[in-house]
Length: 173
Image (tube, rainbow, N blue to C red):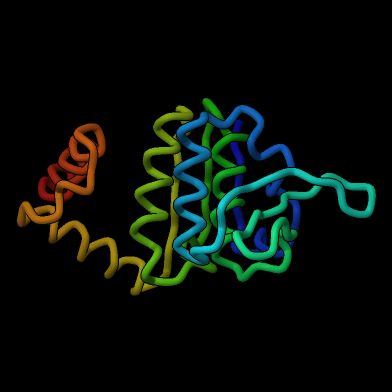
C-alpha cells in the first residue's frame, strides 16, 4: 500500500488517527514521546479519549492533564501525523511532501533521525521531499559532523551503520 502525507494534513484528521498507538512498538512509544518533548517539555504521554462522541488523540501534560492535540502548534501535530502514517504504512510505501512543514529547524535533525529508524522498524519505504534550504542545511551540517567523526556517541551502532552507508552513498554520487 502507498500512503501520501501532504503539508496540509496537519489541519485535518485524514492521517492522524486515534488508534495511533494500536500496533506501535513499546520502545517506539517512548521515542515518540521524547520527540514530542522537543516541542514542549511538559509532554508526558499520549492517550486516546472521547470528545463530542468521537475518538480523539490527547496529549498528557505535566501541569494540566489531558488536552486535545488540536490546541498544539504545528510541530507536535506533524510528528503525530508522521508516526500515524508510519504505523499505517507498515510493509508499504510512505510519500511525505515537504517533510519540514510545521517543524522548527532546531527539531528537524531529531525528527528525521526518528523517521529513518521508525520506517526501518516498520518495514516502510519512505520518499521525502523538501524545498527548504534550512532543512537541507540542517541535514548537511549533521552529515559534516558525522564525517569528521564527532558526536557519534549519540547514535546506536545500528543507527551509525545506516548513517555510514548513507555517507558512503553520498560520497560515491
